[in-house]
Length: 134
Image (cartoon, rainbow, N blue to C red; front, side, top):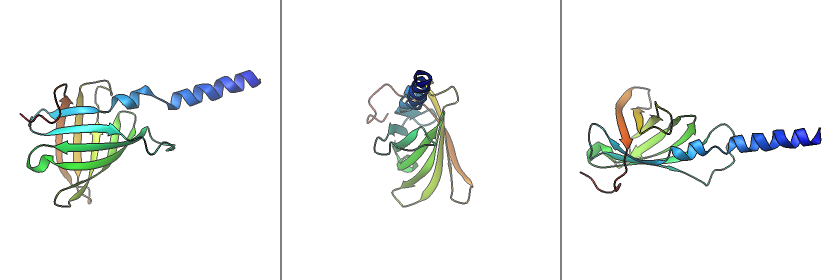
Protein backbone atom coordinates (compact mmCIF):
# COMPACT_ATOMS: atom_id res chain seq x y z
CA UNK A 1 0.00 0.00 0.00
CA UNK A 2 2.84 2.37 0.86
CA UNK A 3 4.50 1.64 -2.51
CA UNK A 4 1.23 2.35 -4.35
CA UNK A 5 0.88 5.66 -2.49
CA UNK A 6 4.45 6.68 -3.42
CA UNK A 7 3.81 5.81 -7.08
CA UNK A 8 0.65 7.90 -7.14
CA UNK A 9 2.43 10.85 -5.49
CA UNK A 10 5.34 10.54 -7.94
CA UNK A 11 3.00 10.37 -10.93
CA UNK A 12 1.03 13.38 -9.71
CA UNK A 13 4.22 15.35 -9.15
CA UNK A 14 5.57 14.49 -12.59
CA UNK A 15 2.29 15.37 -14.26
CA UNK A 16 2.50 18.92 -12.86
CA UNK A 17 5.93 19.39 -14.45
CA UNK A 18 4.81 19.42 -18.04
CA UNK A 19 7.35 20.01 -20.74
CA UNK A 20 4.46 21.26 -22.86
CA UNK A 21 4.22 24.60 -21.08
CA UNK A 22 7.91 25.20 -21.77
CA UNK A 23 7.15 24.84 -25.50
CA UNK A 24 4.78 27.83 -25.42
CA UNK A 25 7.72 30.17 -25.17
CA UNK A 26 9.39 31.47 -28.27
CA UNK A 27 9.62 34.17 -30.85
CA UNK A 28 6.75 34.81 -33.25
CA UNK A 29 6.26 37.17 -36.20
CA UNK A 30 2.91 38.55 -37.40
CA UNK A 31 1.50 36.94 -40.53
CA UNK A 32 -0.13 40.25 -41.51
CA UNK A 33 2.72 42.62 -40.63
CA UNK A 34 6.27 41.19 -40.41
CA UNK A 35 7.30 44.32 -38.48
CA UNK A 36 5.23 43.13 -35.50
CA UNK A 37 6.93 40.45 -33.46
CA UNK A 38 6.21 38.91 -30.05
CA UNK A 39 8.45 37.07 -27.63
CA UNK A 40 6.76 34.70 -25.15
CA UNK A 41 8.88 33.83 -22.09
CA UNK A 42 7.99 31.67 -19.11
CA UNK A 43 8.63 33.38 -15.78
CA UNK A 44 10.30 31.29 -13.11
CA UNK A 45 9.69 33.53 -10.09
CA UNK A 46 6.14 32.27 -9.40
CA UNK A 47 6.47 28.51 -9.00
CA UNK A 48 3.71 27.62 -6.56
CA UNK A 49 0.65 28.48 -8.62
CA UNK A 50 -1.89 25.64 -8.39
CA UNK A 51 -4.39 26.28 -11.17
CA UNK A 52 -2.17 27.34 -14.04
CA UNK A 53 0.70 26.05 -16.16
CA UNK A 54 2.70 29.10 -15.16
CA UNK A 55 3.14 32.82 -15.62
CA UNK A 56 4.46 34.25 -18.89
CA UNK A 57 5.84 37.57 -20.08
CA UNK A 58 4.82 38.59 -23.58
CA UNK A 59 6.76 41.38 -25.27
CA UNK A 60 5.60 42.84 -28.55
CA UNK A 61 8.08 44.84 -30.58
CA UNK A 62 7.88 46.57 -33.92
CA UNK A 63 6.25 49.76 -35.13
CA UNK A 64 3.38 51.86 -33.76
CA UNK A 65 0.73 49.67 -32.06
CA UNK A 66 3.05 46.66 -32.11
CA UNK A 67 4.93 47.85 -29.03
CA UNK A 68 3.54 46.67 -25.68
CA UNK A 69 4.32 44.42 -22.70
CA UNK A 70 2.02 41.85 -21.10
CA UNK A 71 1.90 39.35 -18.25
CA UNK A 72 -0.31 36.29 -18.50
CA UNK A 73 -1.15 32.92 -17.02
CA UNK A 74 -1.11 29.79 -19.14
CA UNK A 75 -3.57 26.91 -19.03
CA UNK A 76 -3.41 24.18 -21.65
CA UNK A 77 -2.75 25.82 -25.01
CA UNK A 78 -3.86 29.32 -24.00
CA UNK A 79 -2.44 32.33 -22.19
CA UNK A 80 -4.70 35.04 -20.76
CA UNK A 81 -3.46 38.24 -19.21
CA UNK A 82 -3.19 41.97 -19.36
CA UNK A 83 -0.99 44.40 -21.26
CA UNK A 84 0.07 48.01 -21.26
CA UNK A 85 1.75 50.12 -23.94
CA UNK A 86 3.95 53.21 -23.93
CA UNK A 87 0.99 55.60 -23.78
CA UNK A 88 -0.37 53.80 -20.71
CA UNK A 89 -3.33 52.02 -22.31
CA UNK A 90 -4.36 48.93 -20.37
CA UNK A 91 -6.14 45.99 -22.00
CA UNK A 92 -6.64 42.23 -21.78
CA UNK A 93 -4.90 39.77 -24.08
CA UNK A 94 -5.36 36.13 -25.03
CA UNK A 95 -2.95 33.91 -26.93
CA UNK A 96 -4.17 30.62 -28.36
CA UNK A 97 -2.18 27.88 -30.08
CA UNK A 98 -4.93 26.34 -32.32
CA UNK A 99 -2.78 23.36 -33.36
CA UNK A 100 -1.45 22.81 -29.86
CA UNK A 101 1.59 24.36 -28.26
CA UNK A 102 3.96 22.44 -30.49
CA UNK A 103 2.39 24.17 -33.51
CA UNK A 104 3.96 27.08 -35.34
CA UNK A 105 0.88 29.34 -35.18
CA UNK A 106 -0.48 31.45 -32.34
CA UNK A 107 -3.61 33.62 -32.50
CA UNK A 108 -3.71 36.77 -30.40
CA UNK A 109 -6.72 38.87 -29.44
CA UNK A 110 -6.83 41.98 -27.28
CA UNK A 111 -9.81 43.50 -25.51
CA UNK A 112 -10.50 46.83 -23.80
CA UNK A 113 -11.30 46.71 -20.10
CA UNK A 114 -15.02 46.91 -20.94
CA UNK A 115 -14.73 43.74 -23.08
CA UNK A 116 -14.76 45.38 -26.51
CA UNK A 117 -12.39 43.64 -28.91
CA UNK A 118 -9.44 45.86 -29.84
CA UNK A 119 -7.59 43.65 -32.29
CA UNK A 120 -6.88 40.14 -33.47
CA UNK A 121 -3.79 38.85 -35.18
CA UNK A 122 -2.03 35.61 -36.06
CA UNK A 123 1.66 34.96 -35.58
CA UNK A 124 3.99 32.21 -36.79
CA UNK A 125 7.03 30.85 -34.99
CA UNK A 126 10.08 32.87 -35.96
CA UNK A 127 13.40 31.09 -36.36
CA UNK A 128 15.30 34.23 -37.34
CA UNK A 129 16.80 36.90 -35.09
CA UNK A 130 13.99 38.43 -33.00
CA UNK A 131 15.38 41.95 -33.07
CA UNK A 132 15.62 42.00 -36.87
CA UNK A 133 12.60 43.85 -38.22
CA UNK A 134 11.91 43.44 -41.95
